[in-house]
Amino acid sequence: MLTLVIISALLVFASTKPCDTEGSNTELLLSLNKNLLRSLENQEGIPNPSVHLALRLSNSHNLAKESEHLNRLKNNLHNDIQSALSNSQPVSGLLALYTMALKSSCHDLNTVTFTVNGRSETLLTHLKNQMELEKEHIAFSHRPLTNYYQYSLGVLALCVSGIRVNNHVTKKLIKAAEHEHFKHGESESVDTYAMAGMALQCVKDSGSHVQNAAELDTALSKIKQKLLASRRLDGHIGNEFSTGLAVQALLAMGSEVAECSAPMEAMRTAARSNTYHNPMAISQTLPALQQTSYMAIKSKECLHEDNTLVLEPIDPVVVSPSQAKVTVIVQVVTSNGAAALYSVDVSKGSSLLEALELLKEKDVGFTFEKESSLWGSFLSVVNGEQARQSDRRYWHLSSDGTALTEGVGDFKIEEAQKITIRNMSY
Image (cartoon, rainbow, N blue to C red; front, side, top):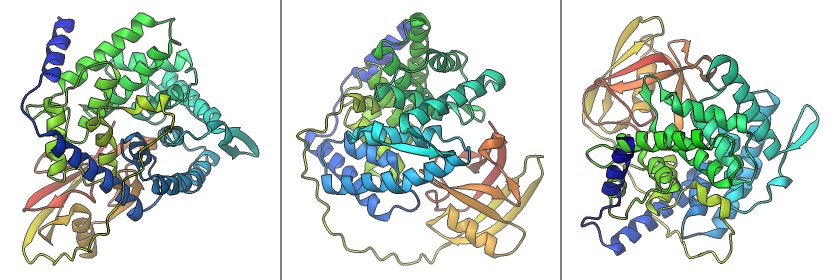
């Protein structure tokens, strides 16, 4: 039955239907590519290795700007990771993305080192060590130090770099897929299934996991089934922001996702409506729209690349403040279940972050702190209570009962609504 479900779903993915003209699709890809390249000029905090990955996997390049960004990664991001390693902080995901970003630019990974406690070791050695720590943590606590998304990233980064992944490390990922441990809160994480699918497919293609070949094939089938079962009526897989990784994974695992299939059309529709205005979202979607995946990094040669991508100067956009006001009710639910309600009037079109800043300024007892990530700002402390990764807790955001798929800096307030901020575990 499982085989029939997968085959029928794949036939739907491979089927064609009327879709946009080739010229229109090409123009959209070029626009997304330029938006991603332009985001480098406005990046705050550490440079984003995922953005670099997408630019390097693209068909069009601005090699000068990509080189500038590579240098920023090798300095700013490198120093940030160095600091985390020195303080014994788990950085598997960031280290993996940094590895793949360098590999996508054909940089010699053996020349990149970190010095911890006076001892200098290569980037790949540190990544392998991080994965061992993650694996050992799973052994006694049944979960990684970070999460299975970062764990999958680590496996994928080692594999595409030509490093044989420890069988015990791979087996932990296989077992997690088998027992459906890829969750965020109570919901299954399509992003994690997708990343795990690419990681395990890379291991299979490398031929290094022959001891448990049957288990590996079963895990890959399970992951593919989960991705296909997560497809919505509008064509998205999971949600608008997980579809790119899901399509990448299906492509990597050998599924045909036709140019005019529903997921491709869904991503194009979302892109044209500016859903992917966050650089991280574009970076995961653009490779999928070009029908490639992070797996392509393994064979990248950086030869004879197109270098015609040029950014035209754009006139600054003057946005007049909106006169319309909407009321936002903010409910904070702490870990012990205690709830507090607040109200604030904000200009229509304000971001949720701006609304929270206004509420904080009202001095009504609402306080919060935020931290930066590759996706933008996220809430770390609300009303004095922390929700830290080390404690397996996070602040879950919802609007009128529907979970937000965007972060506090990206979600826009267009109408009166109730925002719930709840301290949850995972």
